[in-house]
Length: 317
Picture (cartoon, rainbow, N blue to C red):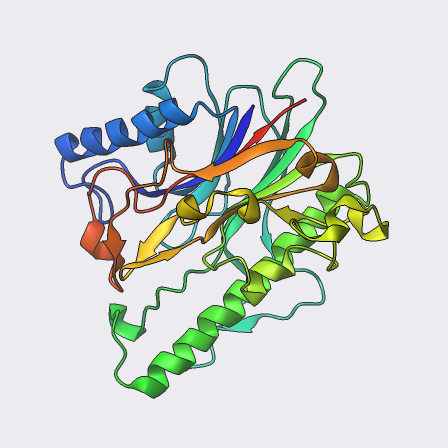
């Protein structure tokens, strides 16, 4: 079975502030998204940037067979949220945006404004992808973007000092959100990562070696490609493994930012689940073909498809 994650990029019905301007553009976008999902044929797909809940239902309706949908009840200021498309029934385990109890609110602007939780909720579900396969527990997330915005709706800073400060504010938020997501992963793992199939998927808005991404992994050691990977230790019960090293080098990106390829969408697996991974990749067939994005996310309003590629793992028995 295939487990994946995909940022659908501004999935809104037409006519609103952020979505396609007309029905024709909306239908073109849906058709492009549906073609990729059909080619992937996932059992479970975590999704991000669902602006209108009805739009995800519209997408599911374009796919063959029966699909189950789950969405977080914690959208961001634009209404985008995370969710799942699944071939099998879903049971929602957690839907939260809260920071862990000891993590204080983080600064967000020059005026000292703070936030006490994640900008978008984390959604965790349980499903049984195949009869007799046992439960699969998966959390999906969309962490704070590195694309910066400034007071007054600007996407360009007044000076380098402002750019640096707002870059720091975004990093504070992303690190806090990663810490909150790791806390949710701890609940799903329950110290039984050697026995439980658990995954964390989503748009983490940073690359494999970034400090925020590394927060999610748990105790160091046993990394894929090292001698320790084949050796069991006490950390296996709570670790997560990023499947990035298993993705062919030519496919190891999920977005193109100002001409530079980045892998910012990730699938992380528990010890029991990583042992069942038989392949990993991005896109639906070979290296993804993606547009290069810039600092202004509004430039792609209403464009077909997505500016992200899906990231996926194939899991065997």
